[in-house]
Image 1 (tube, rainbow, N blue to C red):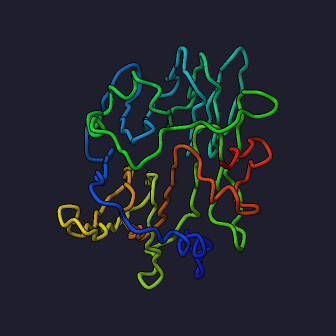
Image 2 (image 1 turned 120 degrees about the horizontal axis):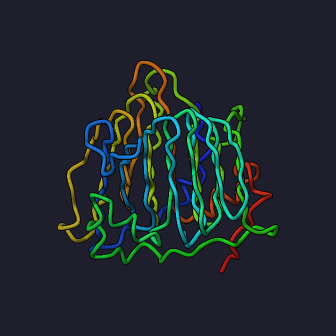
Length: 300
């Protein structure tokens, strides 16, 4: 999952802005393995969690179960960790193997799991009906003044369509994980960590103005969080060390310093999610594996 030399090191060093005061910096934890689903019907169980700009829907489905969207306002993401799916959208259909990531166009669509299994879908907060299903729907009622308003990235030159990518990509020296990007999300499948992470090789860092969602799909982890000391002591918090199993998800707010430590004895699989995509990662040569399919947002 993490090499001896973390290729993000130069990016972390550049993130040196002083923390502002009066920020709402509350982590959002969802332990799907320990809590009942928000939906349990029609052969599927679905857990929801929201971040500032997005909704994560984790589901476990029986064979033949499907997930439909009508009038979806923007592009969304489907993660297939294990089993295949039939994706239908905009009059098109595509059979997608397991261990894949799929970007689904706006409008009407359906995801069907013929063999059942797990599926993770990612939507922007424009999907108001899904935001309402999140147990933490009210967590962002006060807003986040330090997180810029969501702005989608440019559409692909060939237009929207079902785009599927195989996640069976070998690690490469100097590249960080397996990163894919669309108009609404950036998703990074970190290389699977076998056994616990070396506690002498952690990577604490922070983000100035965007959240990171860390989704655990296998194994167990400890999320280490440290709130920066601003001049206003009311901003200060005790350090947190949040031990989680899988599946679970933690939304880490800016500007909290964080690092995640794999702790399971076997396979530990973590996925980092950003909404909208990250420009700094996109600017690294070779990091975004589908870079040719989606233009980079114009720099202001």
